[in-house]
Image (cartoon, rainbow, N blue to C red; front, side, top):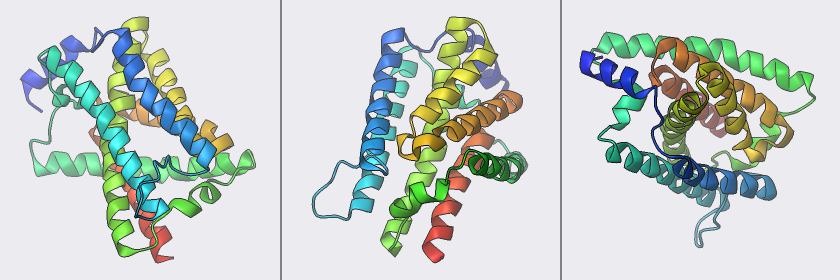
Amino acid sequence: MSSSTVTTSADTAREPIAPWWHTVLVLVPLAVGSIASWYQHGLPNANVPGISSRLSSYITILVQEWCVVFLIWLALRRRGLSIGSVVSGRWQTLGAFFKDLGLAVGFLVVAVPLIGVLVHLIGGDANSNVTGITPKTGFELVVWLACAATGGFCEELIFRGYLTQQFSAWTGSRVFAIVLQGVIFGLAHGYYEKVMVLIMAQGLLLGLLAYWRKSLRPGMLAHGLQDGIGGLVAFFS
């Protein structure tokens, strides 16, 4: 990570990226998508004609999340900042990439069983919530993997990056910001219904990972891997 990137990130972390109304604009599509997914009992689906319901859901997710990232990019651009200033730099060496990949895998080894135990304790079934939306054809699998990569990048940028920095700057408390973004992360996954509380816990853990590592990169890898592997396992089983 270059020293200029570190300086930029440290300087901008003390102030919000954008005004309050911009954050409302960011939250509205997330809320609409979550309510739609809860109502439709699956991923938010714009019901694009001529394609399967699953593909329509995947396309809806792709458009929704990249539109939100576009809004964040506009706010950053207005301040003369880049997406990289929120992510906290790029991999300068192959070793740095593998270090973050190892952290991502380690996170999943701990977090996935923990969330599974918590799901069991509250009497939920996370698998039943996603059975109908996992890919069934080769093309759907390819689009699903694109959605997994999108979720890893976009959702970490939105929740652990943008929203965490907004809340931290407004409240003066990084801890409160991490907790609040985790709550909103869970609420943004309406199709999980009562299991949303466990998605909140996972959002909190991802927030702690980002805070500890001072970067969104390990969380992006972990998030994308979890979604991608989940789709692959469902497809081949």
